[in-house]
Image 1 (tube, helix red, strand yellow):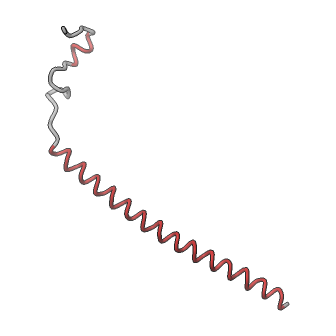
Image 2 (image 1 turned 90 degrees about the vertical axis):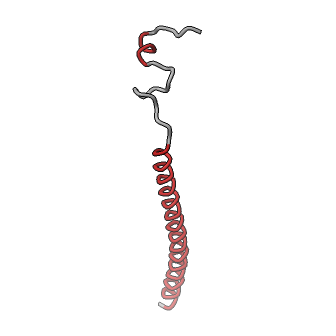
Length: 79
């Protein structure tokens, strides 16, 4: 009986130690997750701010000098 109790005690001790290691690892992962989320939010804010100040394209969505109609018709531009 005493031997069984000792074995169970040692098994319980190992489980508690493993649980503590996993708890620490979970805390580190949670901190990393918070940091990554904060970085992502900063990047999204930066992208939103830069998109408001980005130069606008010419009417029709094409940069100047390119005509979508001439590209679709297959006509080549003179060189």
